[in-house]
Length: 415
Image 1 (tube, rainbow, N blue to C red):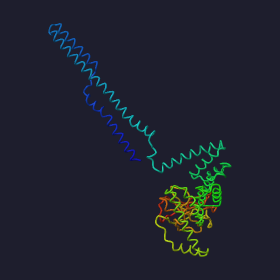
Image 2 (image 1 turned 60 degrees about the vertical axis):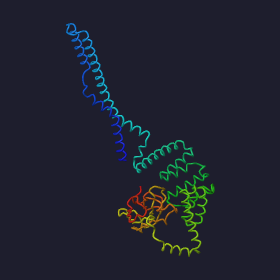
Image 3 (image 1 turned 60 degrees about the horizontal axis):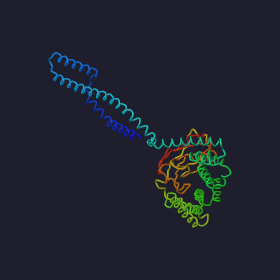
Image 4 (image 1 turned 180 degrees about the horizontal axis):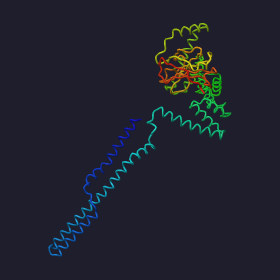
């Protein structure tokens, strides 16, 4: 930003120098022509009188008088021209001052109207301003709908606005006011299911019911298929996940990022589904899972984060040993759905933890898929991942995948 301002100032100075150059030269050329027009006229009148007196006295011939008068007239014209230049010089200096002032002002005004002043701001400031603008527009829409509530499309728009702002409870209430048409719209049912998954940081019975209802109304609804596959994958129903995502894949742009993500999820689900069938009985599957977990190679550098979680001494009397503790990683730039999560109890604290790609709720929304993430910890008074009043929380500033030795202190009480 500072570099931009310096460059703009340098260009303005260069433009002024080129524009004012003629005035500087004119001023230097006529600096010596500083005299009064009235005084010049009086001097010429006196000399003309002297010449006529000489002619009357006989000391000057008629021919010589004519030559002398012609010479005086020529001198008077030259003096008048010099006087006009001096006047023009005064006007030129005033013009130069006006130009020097107006040029930067006009340039700034034109850039403000036609340019992008916000482009010189940092990404963080731009994001904050965009969020503030979105908040204002959403508040205006909410006020308008309270005055005229019979507007299903308006409530849908408000719900989506709240959802984009992460105001889950407000978004859920807005969806509830859409009206009777909501239960018959597969897309809206899927949107609410996605909202509840984000709000609860995982799948619960309510979003599962909404997904099933959406697929009954519209078997190929893209969002419902994606969420249904994610729920099946997370529940280790890999064959069901692959089937749902295979119905979704033909609707995506071939070779696009979404298509590649779904293809990868299908391949992973098919691979795990085949491994599960080959395992035999449930007991044998448990043994195989334990062996795989024991022999599983350590996560690669960019696919995990690790550190230590502690409870601040000042809050120890605010937590019970059996209170549930959620440790989860979220993308800094992306949806709020956790990239990985771990559930323990207060009695386990202090605790050394590791979050990696194997704990992802969605196969392709994992730690290694983002550039920056934040690790958060929540002591839930209700036992649910949904934030609640009186929960104890702690978080770590943004880090990159692969970060180790993080220290997270639970030191805040949610109002």
